[in-house]
Image (cartoon, rainbow, N blue to C red; front, side, top):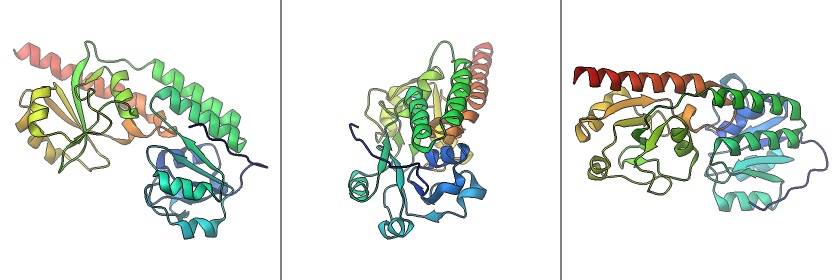
Length: 264
């Protein structure tokens, strides 16, 4: 983002404006230095519960932040809003990430490690994640897939974002990949895209099993599954849980298609 911040010493009063990066900070052992988090920062539950809430990711409580007197604020270009970040940057050091790929997320982890004096712990995490993702077994051949994050209106995952990257790593070919970011998708558009697999994310819209029939009616030939959205979209230390989950999901999808072929 071509921005620089200057820290005279290791930060002791950190405010995190991004749930996945909040969890990362705790993983790096910085819990006692975190003074503020958003209302969406829910992991780790027992530690975040006691921290001051500074609003949401897109509507900051500037008064609460001012009372905390942070010496470092950590945000993200996609998850936070530009006006709010620019306002905070006038008073505090604000460090921003911009995440599109796994490689971006690993670089972010090392960057936060450098900022906070936890380089060794960050490098250890990056090494483990790199090894885990090297063991991810993508679906072969790739499965035409649509991934949904919202209902009424339907919103799917297009290109140029972290979830699209994760789908690609799984061998799930994004049939909405020609669309930008997080497009609204009509039932007719979905029908024409003809996915073989439809994934319904548990967040931000809390898709449940009861919603499967709704999408099955639009694409009767597709396999429809509810998935853990955190493990597709959180790009901090929660990625430690992603590869085992994704390998199981890929195997479930592949097995389902094999059974369909056998049944003719």
